[in-house]
Image (tube, rainbow over all chains, first blue to last red; front, side, top):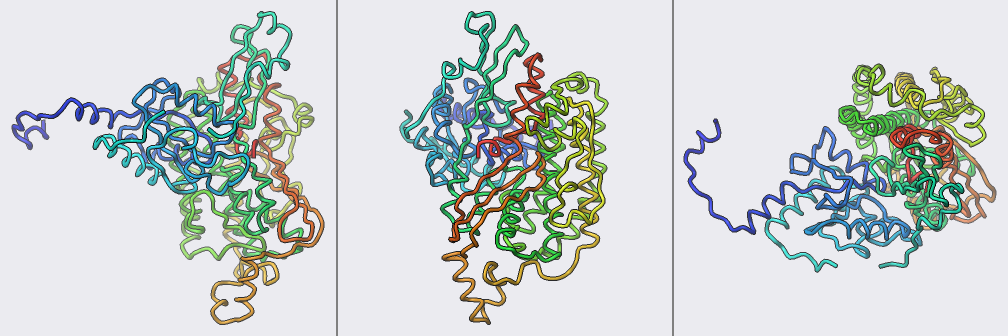
Length: 161
Length: 409
């Protein structure tokens, strides 16, 4: 009703199939329900009442990697966890994206030691890094918007593999 | 790929019963990526139909090397590591560590600092219980509770941010006192919270306490006896839910807890529902403590005056040469702690959180060992889970309130 009346007759929108697909992927991107450490709590906060990530089309966290498009690596990745993480990534269907949330996932953070993988990009290709220890929910949402920007503008990602 | 090691099911097979080898029972892997394991816990389940015969936790997926890393840092800088142990109880971790350092150095903490420490740790306890309540309710399919709990948690995090500038990893409590005094808005913010929160607890209780679906999932599930709990070293709400009235805040008061009047809630049933009731009641008791501490919050300094160990306030550095020297020395080479070892413990939201600190006389701790409550509490899981359905196992894991950062360190 209201919106249509205000906009009047907009006519036809022409676009390429690629752009239409990118647009729809963008706003129905399902992240994997996968928390590692402290950042996972802030990831939960980003989805809860105050920050409500679903405003950006990210409301459906899928516990199964086979149903998800986006992996948010929320927390430190230990050497024992790294192969599990890689397997989860391999199980996700293409196209897939990875956000390294927090300093530990991005570069090892304060833990420069034997136990922690110094940045999750040693294990999986990362599209967006979010800084902070842990990042505020707003920072995570900013990271997600950056990723959406990349998806729509089709900025080339690093070769997956 | 970095050098890695992988634990397969075959590596754990010697732990299950004979029946699994013959194929009479089934082995099922649960985790480390599972929505109900509250982090990266992996369980190897031996199942007879849907009944759990054996449940073997495989931990270490979040092993961070925090204890070893602390040995490479000076006493002040090592504190940054403590926040990341049990990330739902960051203030409490700081408190346990600072109390150990203060014990080692024989430092006095001004009363104002002690009262603020109590206020913040109790607020943190409420925030931790809120995360527990939200996620544990989510495990038994009560989605809305999660949203309500996280709404109130934000208010507590706002208070922590107000005093320290960080929502979670505050490092606000420092050896010898606090980082700095609380801002003027602090008292009003806490009072607002105190006024608002009791009604919110009533809301959660209205959602869950008499909810028949919740009762069905929790009553009589995951029972252990008081004797078993004590033998396993279980502490915290789990122990109080089996009827043992043990709370370090009452039993070994620290940081001035002896001045405050509060009850230690206990139940005798020892099931998932009893743990829920204990934790909800604990939130109400925490409010009482915060209110009392705020009402008689003394004025005065928030840091010890011992310049050998505690950096001088910022305002002194510009006008006093000695202050500048102390500041420089403390933040570059640190201080040499006297030789010896101490143990100090606090009551974290999960139980007894202890830190053992050994000094060889140098500026770095020689050994730091954490006695973390989740680690000991998790040992009770196989006992609790035996004979229950897989769906109940999810409720039981939720009720233990494990934090994997606390277990694996």
